[in-house]
Image 1 (cartoon, rainbow, N blue to C red):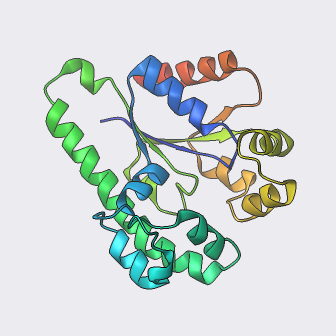
Image 2: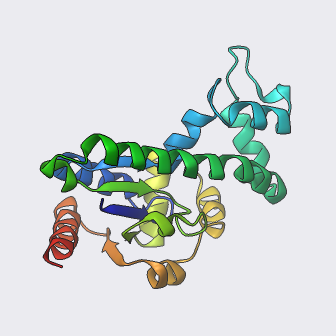
Length: 206
């Protein structure tokens, strides 16, 4: 199975890359953050450990975690963030590996299915060690000012919050060094589509 890891800084446009891969190439998407949210829902593998670590005050009246309060707690507290990640990240990786395995079992005999890539998306792809289970890794790049503009428009982030989040992520130089390929996502959608098409076609030729 072809497993592509997609990463990039906040606001780089990873979501558009995933949308193109899914809609135009039938990719099976495995977004780590989304899976993490599923696992921290009541009954999920991470719900009880997270609630136990941070206290019942973070559990809302409806029985779900107060994600806003949790985000505020770990935003300025690196130790708390590391403890949270120590619970969630290993569980997310296990779930991703399980889904990849199930996908291979379900689609193993279908020729068309074998052409569809599985895509693991994570802003901490390398920090979490996902490259070990990827055939290749793509770094989605966009200039810092463009990312800030996107975040202020789409999420309502202040400039200072954007910069704070960016500071906590792996830098561009290291991402370019470690990735198999770079998608320059600083132009229009058509340019991004062309780069994705070329990357997929290049792999098939090999």
